[in-house]
Image (tube, rainbow, N blue to C red; front, side):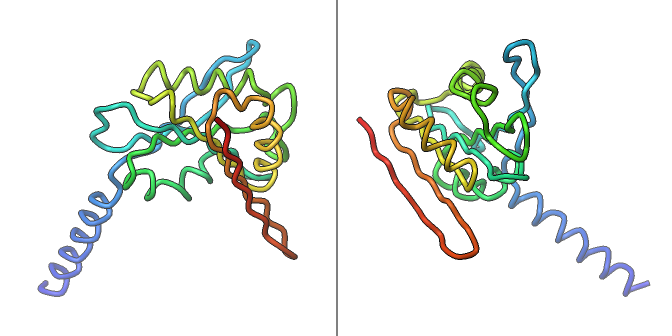
Length: 166
């Protein structure tokens, strides 16, 4: 009986610790683009009261937006950054026009309509295939985002880029 109570107590403490560390929960959302519902994920820091920076995350091939939210959520919570991670139309790649500027713009605007976003601090991060797509998009749409950070990784090498624009 005592052992059962100890096990129950330990399990309860683990559950409480897990709930305490998971401050914000990602939300799965959708936006209609060209008559199709498109999925994206949003994580907003707990107790967000003032306009916050928005980091748009583009996943790599074979992944989805949630994979990027998982990788960035602790930093976002600590620094007060809103994370937004759309799914590409085809999880194997990012492609124009389906995933292009109109789609990304609609996702950002949907988030801005719901959360207090600082419009002067819009950032884009891409990983692997998302990095390649982000580079092209960052150059073509640099008037919307101030910083573009890209990571392209292969087994042979890892390359990191940081593009700053006015």
